[in-house]
Figure 1: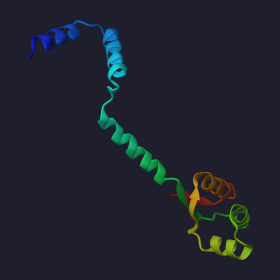
Figure 2: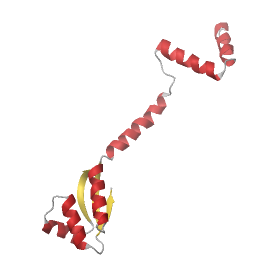
Figure 3: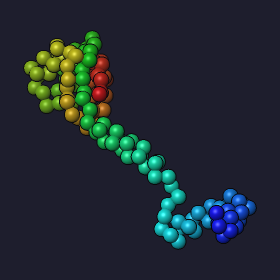
Length: 123
C-alpha cells in the first residue's frame, strides 16, 4: 500500500464512531454512492414477491357445525349463491366457497361463516 493509503487508514483508525458516521455520510453525498450492502436488497425483493403472491385467498367451508340454517343464511350474505346452491354447498362441506378472494373479502367471509357456527379455512 502507498504511504498515502497507510496515512488514511491510520487516520480512520483513530476516529470515533460519530466521526466515522459523519465521514460515511460525507462520502455518500460527495460521490453519490451508498454504504448499504447490495446483498440486503435480494431478501427484501423476495419478501415483496411472497407478499404479492398472497393477494388472493381460497376460502373453504370445512365444517358446518350444528347451525346448518344459520350457515346457509351467512353463506348467502357473503356470496351471490341462491338458496339451492348455498344449501348444496353446506351439505357437501368441505367445499370451496371462493377460489380467488382478496384479503378483505376472504376475512369477511370467514368472520360471517364462523359467527354462524361453521369452520372456515383460508389458503
